[in-house]
Image (cartoon, rainbow, N blue to C red):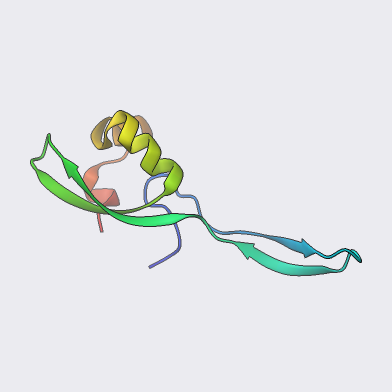
Length: 80
């Protein structure tokens, strides 16, 4: 499974770690992913989703189905 948020599509970023002497070394910044089991009252069941911490905050605020509708996705597309 890829290190990618199933809702937002956020994935790893690459860049440089720069030391005090300005030497550059390649590094990867990985997204803060969580594997969560979210209850969807409209469906009456739990859905297991791999999502970023930012997406999880938005799901807690809006609800899963309204957030997916805003992004043009369905539950079947994002569920594991």
